Image (cartoon, rainbow, N blue to C red; front, top):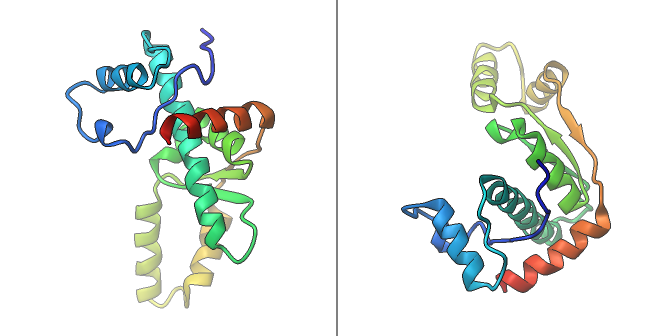
Length: 161
């Protein structure tokens, strides 16, 4: 089933979404309040969430870029979220950055590396990072559909402002 992209957009960080009794109802009310089409089907709600998260990531990514003394063109997504192929591709599309997804079990890997350091097996963080980079296969997502995502970002800014 294909669902229209950018039909309904929310600010995922709005307080309305902190702990609603029904997330679907909260999303629908937000769309009513902002004069947007109300997502009715589960597919429309999911597309609204994925589009909105990726557009929010772009906004935050731009804020981070303002503070960086160099251009950021790669975004690493780690933990459980690194397994969501759709959101990772949407994030690449939205931010215009290459997304590298993985590792999923980063907490466990970090713990193992700290134990290796304590045991004298590795000497520093750079060696730990090299071991991890050589041991974990990352999935790479390249930006696509720049014009559509740029237009959607302007719509997002108009809605959340």
